[in-house]
Image (cartoon, rainbow, N blue to C red; front, side):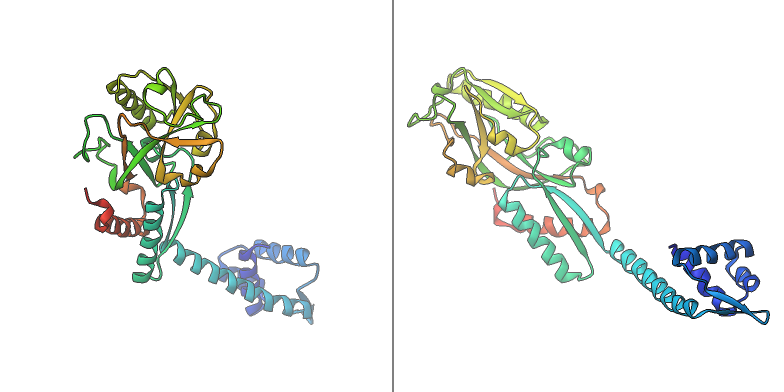
Length: 315
């Protein structure tokens, strides 16, 4: 049942004259008659009857007219409300990696924006797959994403330039220590202390995103400083859960402790650090400002304000 046909039927009932109604509606008389007939066929009754050469509505036609007016009114209301919501809302997909610091800011920024602009609606969805890379932003897979940038051996403090394209904005959320992990299939699993030397010749399991490819070389450098050679094995993991649940027999992985605290409780999973060196990651939020609509830009501005004023951004 088309709303446009209901509007035509309502207009027709004002005069019960097909010629006059067709002129007012700027359609042909045959088209109007066809549309009314289509409604009658769909409902299964006749709406009009001719008495003494004059058209009048049948009882069923009068009842249908009542409902037709209600349906058209509801449709008009729905259009107005949906258009108003569209103008005052946005939907964002955020790659958080489960980082609680970011998720706290995400919710607080939305609450703050809503308190200042009650009509503004921000729908946020979290993506936990492997979006922690520049390509996810450039290709529009997510609107913003966490990016744990591993510091190199010679980087003792926060760099002045993180090396992203000029169109990509970067917010630093803090610094986190990097831990390594092995599963029970690794012969080192039961060893009380694991050193860099113990990992000689083993493979560091990493994803194959641009971020992890860059990180792989940095990890190799850390081990070289400790006099140990390791290999890097990049794999196309669909999600970080896939990565964490993989079971390399003679290999190990890396993890930002704050991202996956629950893994410490797994009996087949062991997190550890090595004494020879400490690796840290600058926890960055990256996004392309040009990708946001007006409400999205308002929300991001609030998010930026909160993050920049947070003590977690201090160096």
